[in-house]
Length: 143
Image 1 (cartoon, rainbow, N blue to C red):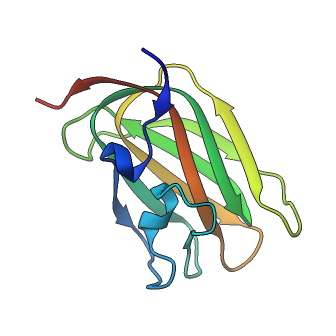
Image 2: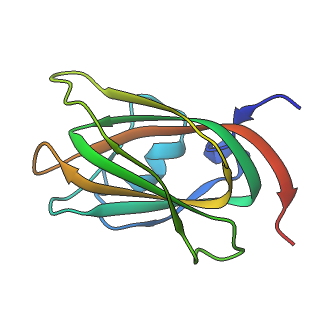
């Protein structure tokens, strides 16, 4: 099987929770595949969002495009419900004045049904996430 972006809404993936929402920049923009759209925080940190795959996936590589994110923590769960998250990755991102932060992460033990992304801190009062790509494969359906 070849890897696909299992994080796209066209693959059945959903953002099931976000701690802030702006009607012009909703959290669904993170997984819509459109580089022109994004989700924005509404101040105060931490902020988070949870992605549901609706199936078991194995992820090999993550690519996060964001702006003003300082510290990002990613947790994963293999449960049928969005519970029992375990810390998986934590990164301090580099501030890139005037351009998107492109954070590529090669991962191990990438089995998940849910991912929780926590923006622990930011370089400004607001931050944005333009896309999350998860290169991998669907392993099995939730049963």
